[in-house]
Image 1: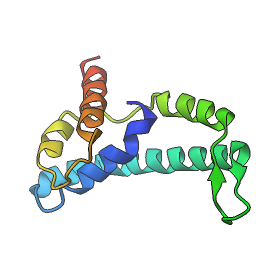
Image 2 (image 1 turned 180 degrees about the vertical axis):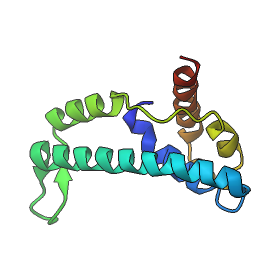
Image 3 (image 1 turned 90 degrees about the vertical axis):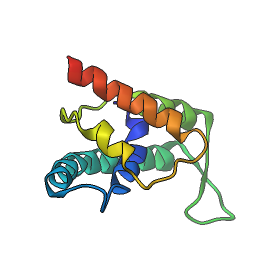
Length: 122
């Protein structure tokens, strides 16, 4: 799955709280534990890019403007593929989420789930 989808998938799966039975909750939690590590790695890499390639905004401490170099490196980071555990039930769990996707997120989630399915079939 591409790194750019990890935060969305984590948020969607978190929305299944209370919708799954005990056994499925354990499966979800096991998958989410690995996914959370990937989310943290992705966020740290993104922040490192911002602080190294972003341009600090003097009027707002802690804020950066995006440079062309940052945008290019962020796109490369977003497209990197990460390995996740093989868990066929994730698509079922996503269908039970209480999370309501924002505009464009449903398509992103479909793409993320499709890449998981490809990995599962391999």
